[in-house]
Image (cartoon, rainbow, N blue to C red; front, side):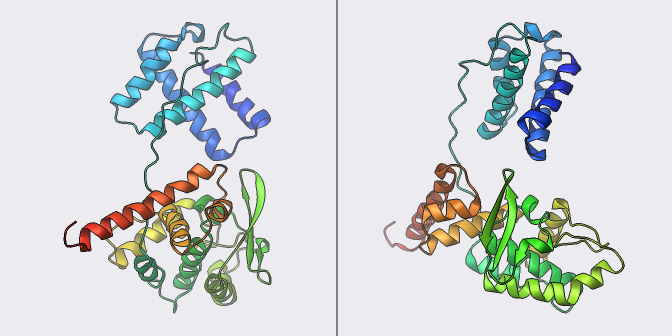
Length: 295
């Protein structure tokens, strides 16, 4: 396929669809992967692509061991891409029309127990500037269920200490969510005692900064969590998203309404939140098998 189509598609996603940076990167990566597949199949003209080639590509991804969710995401990207090409009259027919997305069986998210969360959150050394910052980061993540991409883009002005809430952008829409007393307390300590010392002479509007005084990145948060996971001797591959999952599961376990949790997480569909019910059911079954004498 001609690379000019992919370049024009990129412009379309940015200017007209106004997709997020993550969605843009995902769509372009998936379309380029399909393009590479076509070149291997000696398909050099976009007009030569048929429904059969798209199905072959999906089968190829399946044989490569790709998860159903990944294959579905690829198909969604191709739907948008070929819809764009058809609207621009680059192709005479759309090969993705009526091609069904495979049914997804949602996996139960990996979570931490409340005990593991307590151990992780109490690991940072509060006598250091870095430790105080990291404690605030972990407390905010668990208190709000924010995604790491949302966390690193929070600015100081987004925190309302009086109302105990944080404003942030989700799907290009500004939202406000509550934040707990413990997280507020350590945010205040971080801002009062360590942030300025970490910044030194630098200026930064973002709430969380790295040790060089610049905006903390997603990769930076991952490294922080990995470090404390190892230090706390927790035998799990803890990620920021696992903390988000734990936030949701623990709320539901303690009686929170499913629709309220949906709003806190910013889910567009209740089915995305219902997966945590499976997690509770799974925990009940595991507890029964472990403790019932005739299980």
